Image 1 (cartoon, rainbow, N blue to C red):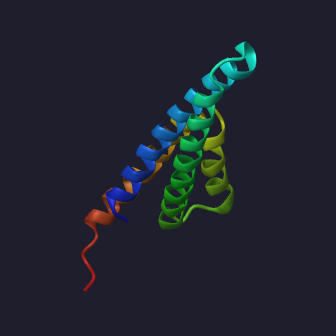
Image 2 (cartoon, rainbow, N blue to C red):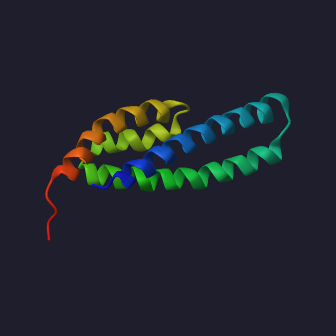
Image 3 (cartoon, rainbow, N blue to C red):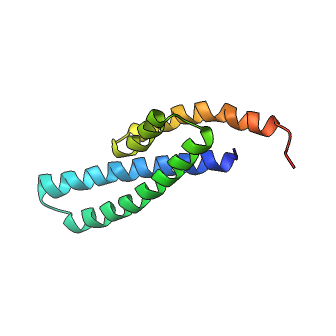
Length: 110
């Protein structure tokens, strides 16, 4: 497995988590204070597009790391819980980095 697979996942996990927190803040202002409806619409659409990229990259990482379905599902769902992606990303990175090192140490197949 290439390191870029993990890097793409990590970047999208952070971006998705930050955008979800921004979206939650916008929703509080929209429904709590009656302001920012247009901003909420824009942020929700941006977050939706970025979340789809997160799903693709997380699925790709899960397939290449050969995760069981339950673990893959948990990583995919963590992007829907505010701030959970930060914690799950750290755990995933710690688990996948040894796989990357083992992959680099293996002889290249021709």
